[in-house]
Amino acid sequence: MLGNLGSLDVGQVADLRPYFDSIPDPRSRRGRWYSLTSILLVCACAVVSGAKSIDELAEWGARASGRLLAALGIRRHLLGWRRTPSPVTIGRALGAVDGDALDRAVGAYLTDRHHAVTGTATRATGQPAAPAPGRLRVLALDGKALKGSARLTSARRHLLSVVTHGPVVTLGQVEVGAKTNETTHFRPLLEPLDLAGTVVTFDALHSVKANVSWLVETKKAHYIAVIKTNQPTAHRRLAALPWRDIAVQHTASGTGHGRRESRSIKTCGIADELGGIPFPHARLAIRIHRRRKLTGRRESRESVYAVTSLDAHQACPADLAAAIRGHWGVENSSHHIRDVTFAEDASTVHTGTAPRAMATFRNLAIGVLKVLGANNIAKTTRAIRDEPERALPILGIINNRDTYGT
Image (cartoon, rainbow, N blue to C red; front, side, top):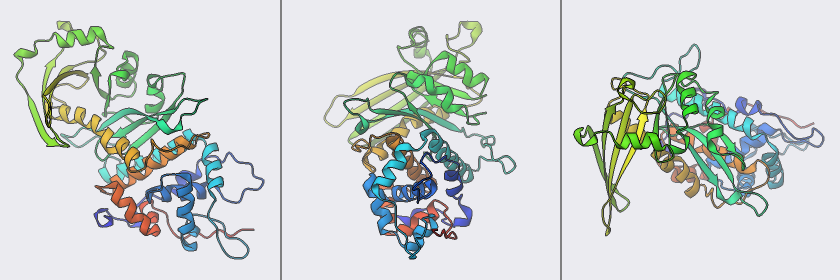
């Protein structure tokens, strides 16, 4: 599994430590032995090694050698030995850490790693450059609930993330409050990102006209928005278009997991002077027709409608179909891995910001391993667990730091 990873030359990989140094320490200075950065680095390395709970984070540190702990910034006692933070220390730090600052740091780190691999950053500015001809830079906006974080006195936490399409890397994440919904966090999540020329995909919940107008006019981005009955006028007009008179422009099919699936796409220009669709900056209407046959069951059919601000010369039907399909692929490439490999839904961590922090570390682990080319996260984390030192080059941590206690 480790042989499938890309280059692990530490000199070619961004060091995670400076990103964590930017996070403010909420703890009192009195009695503080471990720096916040060293605790967060232990957590990051442990999760890359497959740790699922706070106890497993501390157990990974207990197995680590003194040399490895020195590289993570663990202070040395006067007698010369180093001891990893206890589960209580880790739990208190994660419960009190600023969740927004942690997500910003991890998002910035993963953004830099993703740009370095995909070549979408300019050397001068470090900002995303224009995508290569014929390729769309696509991001997906999707939410996920942390089921195990619910208690009798509090609802379960809900997170909203922006994720790249292939390789799947989480560039940003915010927590959705119990008294709000995801749509109110649409702008705050995307505001820090450079989205010029980028295509953003989202489900019907986020097909809000005000947010879509802001995305196109302010961020200079494009969108592909699924339209369902929550937008009754737009949905009715989309369904009434002459789809029977339009030929199928692209098809794709596949088998697996006990089912056979086929998808076809049709697109139709919706000029404003011809009536258009009551949705801001819409240029193309899209109809995806899906046919699914489960083993031993009847075939099911479904038509899904969407609109996009892309013109026909900017994206072909195959590109649009891949972008729409890729949005749902985020579920398999990120959320499914967090639930199955890292047992996120089974986690009972619930104090303070700890549930969100654990989710952030899982995003970090999945992102760096995906960028390096891992095709099986579960097997790769088990291989790293057997050799804890492997986590250092994966996160770009340079083993040249020795901190002495006083």
